[in-house]
Length: 461
Ligand code: FAD
Image (cartoon, rainbow, N blue to C red; front, side, top):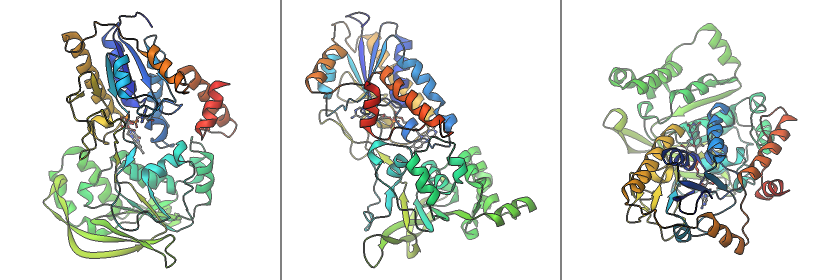
């Protein structure tokens, strides 16, 4: 370390929130030292394990994160499960401040009967599977059915729909895992329905993701024209981004396409479409009860208007047969240490401007701070805000940094005693190199290592 009396901050989690918080701290104060602890042997959180493989440009933030990790006042300790290998209290003893940015690794469940049947997956697991998250390696989703239903209409839902329907030649050139590529090559899924509680005007995706669906080769849209009845009149009152999104939906659903597009659509072998005003009631089982046969949806109507309208039940239901259900109704943060305040209703760490309530020296950023919404840029801004709060507290003396703290020295000793060996950033760079080399031979940007064992093996030999 630079000096025994420099302020020492530790960050829990190496996703965008962790790295952006570290970046701002290092920039704002020339004396602060930052250590990042990460549960997995590999950094970058959802940039590696969430962002779709066919969105490589989104992953460019990794370059900035790498610069931060290589800064002389920043260190990375992977393979350290905070809450298990080391407690938050122990981190607080070793550091002047602790920033929690461990994301949202839980799942919101649908809370309907049948959701545990074979053939029902959370988007979190499904995405984790095609992106090589070690804990989802054995998911092997059954893709032998013709119709898949995705519950939820946000960008994650559209990612899943796109991956299910993309021509294999496109996916082949991405860093999607080999097992996922093989399973998708054999997939029988020809029809994907993307189901939402409310209507077109309330849809949660953004225009880029919708446009990708509209332009996806070998697919055609299949919408219900009546769903758009009230949408045309409402259009003029919508705020700008929402208006453009709605216009694209209207065009896709209702307009007679030009000759070229008509030909493209008639040749398409796969279809996708939104199903609006529907909520899941029950996942229906096959007579054998072993796997799913379909899903029962409640038919809703809207109360109120505009983006804030809410769905109310009509009492009617509709059954849709399908062999695959992916529920994409949101991620959820989980508590990792009983000593840390946690709001289980909102599933966040309660905070004001990133300062954890009633816990001096404790801060939070990213999805753990705000709840699991927003793109990387949103996460960046709220992480900078948290770093600003922390620096303010140091500058004002609210956070006492005058007494020397041991930082990583004492934590490393603790971890060694517990048989936990951290992965350094240069260890990760070995993994990174091996993955890129493996990818090269098959024309992919990267072939991810799929187990923690393999990652550790490469890191340490
Ligand atoms: P995360 O990225 O989840 O990082 C949390 C980190 O903490 C992880 O590395 C995790 O392993 C680690 N951790 C967890 N528990 C512990 C523990 N106990 N001890 C130590 N470490 C721990 N945004 C875009 O801008 N463009 C996109 O295309 C896009 N696609 C997305 C696709 C999906 C499927 C999802 C879910 C999100 C997507 N996002 C996208 C949003 C973006 O990923 C988030 O805004 C961002 O990752 C949130 O950052 P975070 O650091 O809070 O959480």
